[in-house]
Length: 608
Image (cartoon, rainbow, N blue to C red; front, side, top):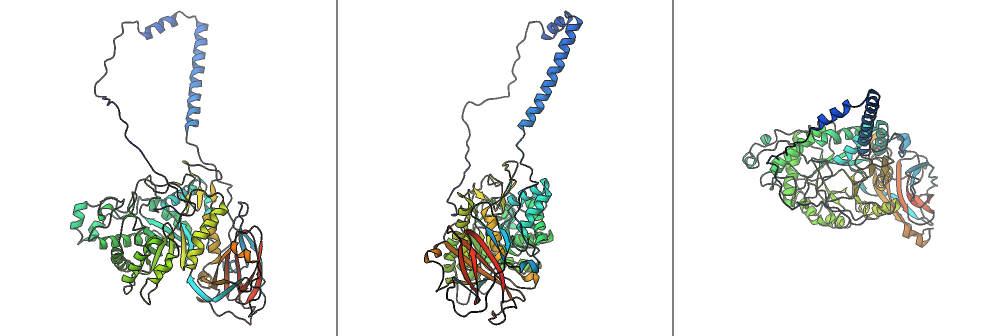
């Protein structure tokens, strides 16, 4: 993460320091103690004690014992009060409900609702869509859903399991395993939970100190260049052992995969080991000349190691924000180098039995769309690049269309939103949800993004843990978890990002595991002869999805047999009006009226 999100306005933090000035003190010379010619205190005390009678001595002795006891108790109390404040017991914390991911539950019609205020959070209501018989006309229809007009397949919605996020979740597991299990059930259930997560291959700006790679003892910088003909010798000390990946991230992801075995994991490097880079450090710099093949082997070896540890990657990006050379783990990488690395990485993955792992290029801001197009066009024949990933910090989602228009004839690439963060606390949760929808979910959805992945899944109330050099001192997580450094009560807070993930996941659930297919975005247009007031359209926004119940692809909707359902539909609607709007929906010609309350609602139903 490099630049702060536009969602809540820019803010940031810095770290400053300096050396004090003054006289230099030396502690080398031994001080000379003065010589006293007075009577030693020990002898005076003994003489005084001998003058006292027995009862007085007993009184003095008792007072001395009381004084010692008081001193001991005072020290104990002081030590107790001086301890860092412990975060509260999380045993009874609230966790939003979720449904089972079996076929029966997934096909149940109803809606999830999140109110503007913090009283109703992703609340489920079972309700029939009550679709009428087929009608060819659109008189009085507000939204026309047409599942024959399909757009991008949906790979999922989620957030990044950074080292910081995994550390906090692992700490929760240690403190209160029952709450941890409930939180993980909500976050990673296979019906409404996180479907895609991004993890850091080595340290990022949201890792714990110190920085790390998977080669603890790096080769000599000068000698490394002489060993390029034997890359394995440069990587012989490769290991995940003792890293934050093995201590926190992988164990938490293994728990997540138990809940959703189809969870898609994206591996993203912030920086390779310093000896591979121009500046011999993890911060900034570029890849050294001749090190493309070594880097490809390092990445592929990491993917293999993660797989053996129980977390098989679904995709890998070539480099996080290659245009950003920062004072934390980062590396610059131009388009030609990304082209070379993509080809080499594909080859190395295939040799390790990981040929189906996708390789994504760019992984940077919208504003760099020309570089993304250059990479894809150069790789058009090699097909080494499977997708292009964008970040939200510079430029605008509309530049995705410019990227697509710049591709060579008959060339297309999948598009993903791989990172975006909220910063600070919005005035209220509803304003935060609206900001995310306006700046991210609505526009990237209509520009064919197959996934939306937020930044940290969890941080503490101090926007931590993070490296001291991290640019973002106010990034928020999907969850806020209490920590010893920054305690809060309740222990877990569910932020706007988490509920957005749940709403969009619920609408676009992949039915492959229950005999159906992957969800796709479908046409959902404003009706020409609508029944709503003209002013109502100013405060209504939506996206629609559909997934086949049987088989991998949507079939033609039936206008005759209304009893034989063959698709599941999901409609995410935001109402920023001050009252409920009764919206007439046409689902492939079959109508119903949906009461859309102020807030965010996801409707789901089945249809012929």
